[in-house]
Length: 139
Image (cartoon, rainbow, N blue to C red; front, side, top):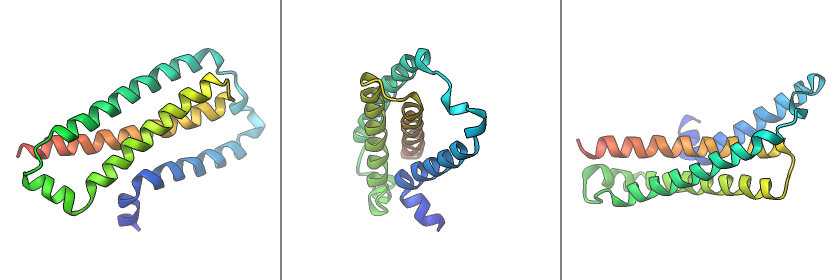
């Protein structure tokens, strides 16, 4: 099970977040937490989403610029971690762009915050991969 979660982290982590979000939503209907008005803060969230897009594009550029003939990169290719990393990047880009599009169309802020949270998760997983690759590539 642990191998499955690691191998498909770009799917399992957002799925677990959505399940947790639904549980929290059902439990918190009585205190009206999710009905708060976030309209003033939504533009700040969108600015951060734009910054995340820039970070993800930079991360993929760093990955593509690393030397491919090292032992580490051969192991990365052997175990398909480059595919997992790419899917994390794509997921982060999709969720960040989707949150900007939802903001443009003035969609419910609860949905906007959820999609933004998913983009943060994908970005953190991508940052973890790029950190590990950068550190271990020079050993």
